[in-house]
Image (cartoon, rainbow, N blue to C red; front, side, top):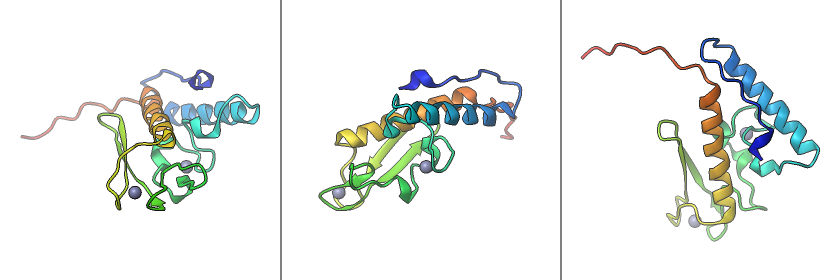
Amino acid sequence: MTATLTLVENRTEPTLARTSLTDALAAEDHAEDTGWLDPLDRLTCRTHRRWIHECGHSDLHVIPVTGHRWCRPCRRALEIAVDEVTRTVTLHCPRCDRGAATRADHQLIAACEASLTAARATRTTPPAVAMAA
Ligand SMILES: [Zn+2]
Ligand SMILES: [Zn+2]
């Protein structure tokens, strides 16, 4: 439920990027505690206090019970790759070579891609750097 997020648009003040993450965390903590938000639909991480795409690689995000970042046939954690440029997230099992297949896989990818977009919307656009040829 992304409607609970209030994101501040401001591209000039660098400190606002952190404020916006803090705001998003507070909003999602509240939404989860009051029963409006499934913990696995969150765009922010309650444990790491970061955007979910920034810590989805942590072992704490492997949940065999629900099948999140978990390959059931192989009984091992899926690898997660986050592409910040294309804002896409992919899962891969290093043993059976499968990609996203289950509902849990797609739920995780959807949350990470939404958090990529939310983080981008609140982040200060870096100044253009002149590249030497
Ligand atoms: Zn986390
Ligand atoms: Zn597998």
